[in-house]
Length: 86
Image (cartoon, rainbow, N blue to C red; front, side):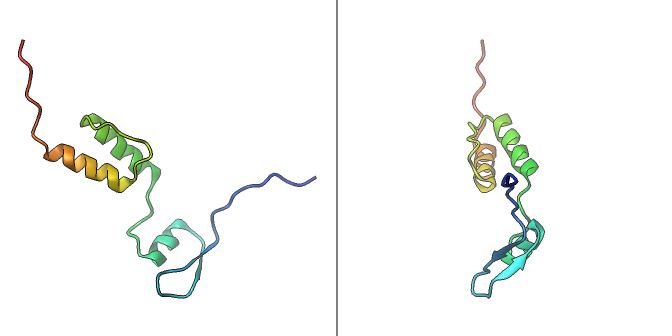
């Protein structure tokens, strides 16, 4: 009997643009090698989703962190909706 398959992301090979392949062992190392500021943390995305929803943006869970930030910036730049007086 064989053991069930378990996906393991690291270690893995990455190829930085214009450089030889590098074996990496963590998300932080991958971000460093590929030049990203830092790996995206799930709670960062969840925080942005909550902020966008609070601002009245219709959030699509598939949006990237960049798209969420763009939508939040647009919502903050938009003039406030007029208040309805009764």
